[in-house]
Length: 194
Image (cartoon, rainbow, N blue to C red; front, top):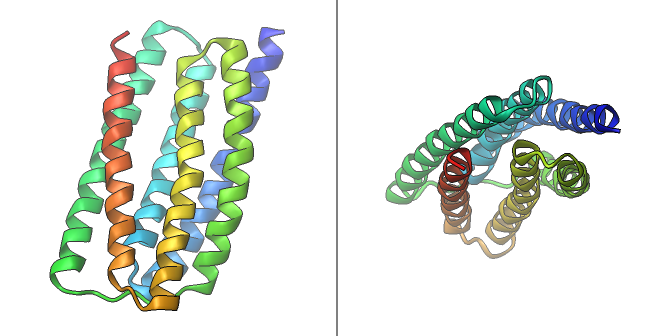
């Protein structure tokens, strides 16, 4: 039973990893640079972070244990903190310079699909993580669920900018992403100390 659950956990992480690798290409190499969207760029870097998170969870599931779990949670914490700093600096830069982002059809389609896929993956990770009593998989499952919420936030900020010309909505979306990153960094670090 446990080996079957570990295999399911790994499959969920491999699916997440594959989706996010495609997402980095779509967001950071194509959609975000074309429209100068801090929220879309921030979400692209969050996607890059998710690749690291999935890699950490796969590593941890290959040798489940207290020391690996603590290291995995600490690595996730540090990565989230660095991403939060990046988004803070980029958001402040865009706010000071009144940078206006443009609409991205490709970005909006990808965000919509990501929202749906991440909700499904998060729910499955929670189920498997609970059955395994694995805090690293459960933490990464919460990250995946919030990743879905962040996709929704970025999508809404892009739509507000497009429909109402609220240029600052993109920056507000960036600040929301930043707050989430700091919250998750603190949460993962506290879990690593238990």
